Figure 1 (cartoon, rainbow, N blue to C red):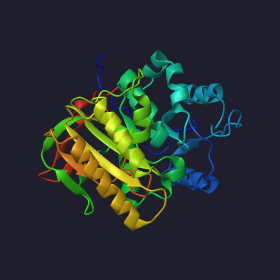
Figure 2: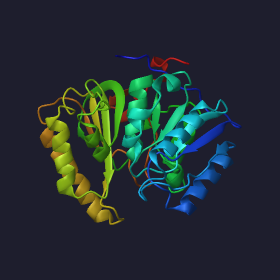
Figure 3: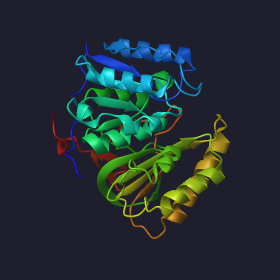
Length: 313
């Protein structure tokens, strides 16, 4: 069922942000502390109660605690946005247990990336709320200046066009318009065949990943193609793929190989494909509004967002 696309209210100085732990445990305490301070420097109040760590050591807490935290902060009328502390794994264990009627009655921002790909796309599909793919608390302090500016502006309700960065490549030109969907490639593949599989036809799809060898990336891209998710797109944004470390030469080589495989898989398609778009696990991670209509214009080299196509709650 197609739902009206709803744009949650922007954040204002003095608003409260709730920090959720829907996936893995925080291992970078210093990064978390810096991220929380950044929110406070933006004159936002922060509500953060770390879970007790019960459950497997790869989860922030057991399923019930993580679910209860998300519902509790979503219910809090003072909390205007929920931002994930970190990703990892765990969101897939929660999504089927979310109370969708409860969430639909309370429009607010949900922000994260990586494993949060599950919740970002799922919440949009089930509620119609635009969600935000962007820095989490534990990664916010290492975001580069442009990525931080995007984060701050989008939370304030400002959706400036993304103009082509110097190191981005237009692999196949053209013009496309559609809703933004996507996120982490591994997580998207895990959603195939589930009720939470994103509907990509007519959409602009974006993908990124970290610490995956080329053969696994190839397998996942081929899986998406075989499942039809690369058919009938309006555009494809290939974010940055990193080898899990900072070897720039290896990263460049990996991304060029990813680009080549994508072009092979989509050789019969006419939609534009951009490579090296600044969305990633690295310092470049522009905040993107999942569910919002956007225009991908290879002639001007810009990705333009269309918030006017969304409803206000």
